[in-house]
Image (cartoon, rainbow, N blue to C red; front, side, top):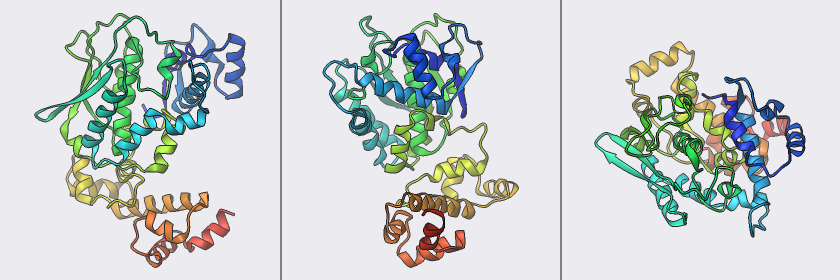
Length: 356
């Protein structure tokens, strides 16, 4: 599900908006979002792009910050210094997904006043990401407090809880650059709405279970974190659109490897053997499939570094020496030679020609 999601998920966000129908129509028009979002009886299988969903989500978060009791923070400051930002930053500097999830669990338990949290439970080769939801009647899904970025909250109600679990599944995959194949998704409550949530997770949801949890093979816990501060900024600015761009069904093997390489080139790049292990295939199979796609592992690594370097050059915030370090090179001259090999130009010439 990399490009779109069901329209009714986006419509559930609109119920949070502290706006009249007329104001809401004007807001959607200014954001260039489809007005079908306002229709009570939209086509059952209607969909919205994940980019539009992310645009709507962030816009509503900004709007709702102004309505929260006692909140005087600037929306941009709220995004940059929120509890979620602090938690994601702690996860970002973990060695691997297992450590990142342990850090996130500690954040929830320390910062969540309502007792909501989640925990990681290992049972042999299976790992359970178990959620503790508040099941009181005081907090409705439409309460703006649930979208406060100053507090850690799971969304309440069946739909809210499932969305919270689905987003957390996607966050885990984003940190390691790999879609995490789930073994089970289980909810304690019985299914009262008859909705099909299988598309969100890739597998059916089991209701009336013993816990609120999703499970996966423990090998994913050893996957290293591949994101950096810049990609975290992008993820937060467009949340949750970036989370839906990693999917095993519609991506080529080359794109899956690019995701596994990630954005942090100051860490050692994964070897061919490590990538093959993460993709659950042998190195000869990996070689063969990349040849069939007309590329190679070395070419993918070079393209990742090239594209990242070009992005930094376009931003214009770094010297060549700083770029060399960000790209993981031992010295500037080596970076110069590599960049000229990739683009036919030195970094300075490229910046002057394309980034002026």
